[in-house]
Amino acid sequence: MTVPAYRQNGRLRWVTLRTDSGIRRFLAYALLDGNGGARPRNEKSTYSGISAYVRPLICNRHQPKMNQHDELLLPTPLGWPPTEKDLRETKLDKIPHEEWCLDDWFPAQKDACWVIREANDSKPLQESFLLMSASEPSDRPVFFIALFAETEPKQLVHELAVLYKVSPDATLESSDTMERLNALYEKVRDFPLAK
Image (cartoon, helix red, strand yellow):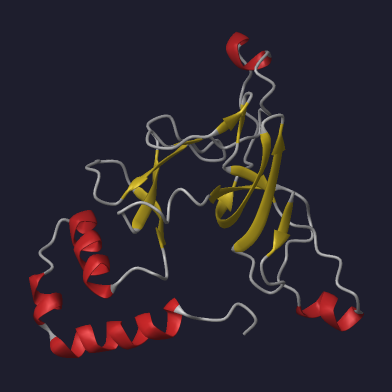
């Protein structure tokens, strides 16, 4: 079950997972739509119980599952605003679907920048993706970059420099640039969800 952390923020949601072993609650960060065009079925996928419409997302470092279902593929919260005005102002998706999300494991890692790359078998309308830290070497094209607000500017600059294979020195040595990044960091780090 997912509910919005704040109704007008479509990225953050509280998640409750109930299994035989207990209940797990965490704040999830939505990344991208988990559904695409139908994939042809083969013998292996016919019996897997996984929809032919799922856009695969593979993370070699963290791929929690509940039976055959990925715990990072979560339903979008459905909004039921109390008034017509709230219905117009809300930014929640009105059509139910699933999205690939980062769970509480990701912000606990030393890596602050995560990227989604296109997998080798990705093609239009039947996309497949890889989720990895920005510092992991890869020649695959970057599709999406996810950053955490708690990331200090120096770490952000270092990780993005590794991702783009450039030196971080010019940015780190620029007091004007680092002052702007630090000011933005202080605003975003402690941003109240209700604003």
